[in-house]
Amino acid sequence: MDGVIIINKPKQYTSHDIVNIVRKQLNTKKIGHTGTLDPNATGVLPILIGKATKISKYLVEHKKAYIATIKLGEKRDTGDSEGNIIEKDLEFKNIEKDRLEEVLESFLGKQKQIPPMYSAIKVDGKKLYEYARQGQTVEIKPRDIEIYSINLKSYKEDEIVFETECSKGTYIRVLCEDIAKELGTVGYMKELQRTAVNKFKIEQSIDLENINQEIVEKNLITIENIFNDKESIDLNDRKLELFLNGVQLTYELEDNTYRIYNKNKFIGLGIVKNNLLKRDIVI
Image (cartoon, rainbow, N blue to C red; front, side, top):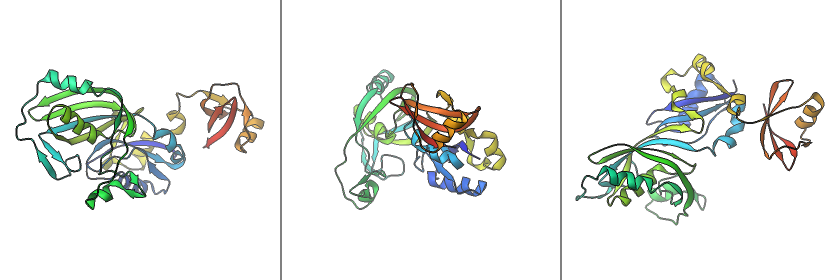
C-alpha cells in the first residue's frame, strides 16, 4: 500500500504513538506522519504509508483548521490544560459577545507570533521545552504566520469556543493566550481539535480503535489522488527513460509541480522550472 490515511487522533497519544500503532497493524516499516499534534490535542493526523513517505515535503506546508476552547481567568505555564496555574484573574467578568467577535476579527491576516517555551523548536541545538523544564529562558524569535479565518462558535461564562484556519507554524496555544490578553484578562487553551490539514478533512478520518488492514485499504488516499489538482504530463517511452535517469526535459510550461504519466500510468511527480522538467518523486 502506498498512500495516505487520515487518523482521528485521540487524546493522550503522541503523533509518534499513532505511527507505531499503524506500523504494527500493517506490519510495515514505511510509515510516517505530517503535521504533529500535541498529546492533549485531537483530530486530523495524516499518516503516510509506503512510498507516500516521499511526499511529506509537500504536505508540511499546508494550511490547517482548528476548533479551540479558551479558558479565561487562568494562565498556565504550558499554555494548555497540562500546565501549572501561574496566574489568576480574580476580577474576571463575563465579556459581551460583540466584544468577543471584535477581538477575534482583529487577529485576521499576516502577523508575527512568538512560539511558546513549551515547544520542540530548537535553539542552539536544544529544544525549548528542555530549557523550560530546567527553569531557563532563552530569546525566541517571532515567526511569520497568517490567520485566514477566525469565528466565534460559542461562549459561556469563562469559556470561548472558536474555529480558525491558519498557516503552518501557527501555535494555537499562543493565539488563545493573545486573545485572552486582548480581552483584558488571561487564559489558556483548554481543548484543541484539528479539523483539517489542507484537503484532508476530519470527515475522512478513521478512529484509532478501528485501524486494521481492511479499513486502511478501504480509506487509503492514493498519491495520484492527493495531487489531482496538479496538471499532468504524459511521457513517451524514450522521454520516460531519460526522466527516470535524471535528465531534464524541455517543456514550455509554467513553473510548478506536475503529475507524470506514461501510457496513462501514474509514474510520480516532476517539477518544471525555467521550461525544464526534472524528476522529483518516482512512485
